[in-house]
Length: 425
Ligand code: GLU
Image (tube, rainbow, N blue to C red; front, side):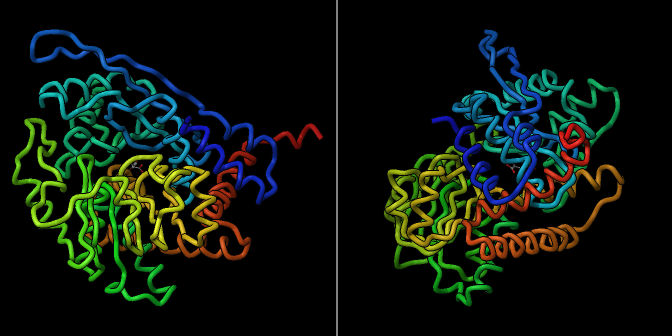
């Protein structure tokens, strides 16, 4: 199943809702630029191994392209195209002056030594250095990449260009111009949205059972924020499996501690798993999706809620912290079953929003407090959520399509402002 084709289906649904020129459709149906690179790395045994990577700049109508870099064994050009497509709409939904891009390398970083990982990160940045830049394409972390990797890449770019340009990449270590609050930002954006939803629906956090799939940067932080706020965390998982507890409260901090207790691989990825936590029943990632809960938060990879399991989802709300966790077929089933899906391009836009703040701080050379970053994030994401919620109600469409409608208005205006077919009429 092509992830990119599925992503396109989401857009086509939104095109039916608004009247746009053919130009917009034509431009948004393919990426502006996509490169494939091969990165040779001298491995610790002396052999040379080549890793394949990609960088796609999908659309830059609203500004320089923006989006993370993924290190994962299942990366493909098709996936990176889809992810760069989602970034295009996410940046527009969030009201940022950015287009969408994405990068990826086919690798399991957990199998590399720290030195190999550094060589790969620097080699990748060097290979894509012609198409990135603070005013052209600005990468950031994504699945299995982190601030340490962003630091190496930023340093590599500065060496290549012989200039200090912190705005070339976001999600950097604070010491290299990173922003306070960037590490928790994806989760915090989702958390503000859940709080607003709870307020709108008149719900009580204490009655709301939450299941989170994925215990990486997004999954861990949102579980912690919700638990600290009195929500009832019943299920957690990571790539190795999960735990479930229907009659107790899972404590994300304790679970993180027990995961950390197993130590780290030399290159800073955890050896342990959520599933190792004692005294809780183990569940698989598939079972977690179907467990009894009110809010389901997929915070791992795409294609998790699919045609085959969508009917078994018991949550009333799905908050997509991952990119593309729900397929279009599953979307239809969830809608029919009355499940409200808060779409990825809105729900996880907190990450890129604080990346934007990081870029602004880098450009002005003046840095903000954590409180300022959090307040500015709140000021952006809550109105976006309410606006999209209203579009959904007014047009009687699902929330994903409503988010695309909001984004399309902005993107199409920019495309048309640059000139359209109308002059030939
Ligand atoms: N990888 C994140 C995402 O998918 C963040 C992108 C960014 O900060 O540029 O939204």
